[in-house]
Length: 134
Image (cartoon, rainbow, N blue to C red; front, side):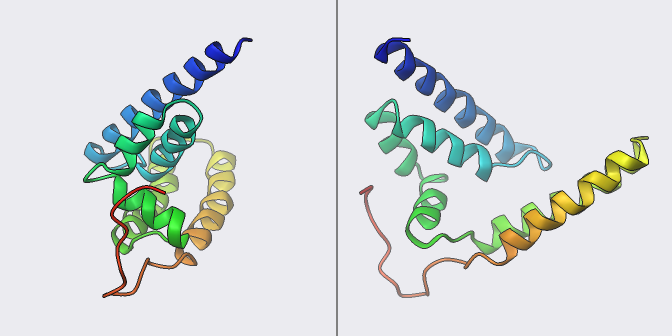
């Protein structure tokens, strides 16, 4: 593959994951943050313009900066993620999924929940908030 094709691949991935992140804002069981992180990863490899746009976006920018600068996940995002993680095996069970599927979901979601809950919430109040992308 040529360098241009690789760049287009990452650019399309960035658009796809950004679109999924926007859908995640509107739909309660669709995660936003993982798609947002994937979009940022793709745009960082394909387009400075779109990467900067994402980091300066009024809704998504603070989440990305918080993650990149502090390895942090905000309290609202944590609550939303944990609620979805609890709902997933419950809904799977009531929608008729096989018990082994539910049994596989639980340890994976529990591990994910532990990771999320052990991340810091972000900078302390009064800490200087970054205004621009590095």
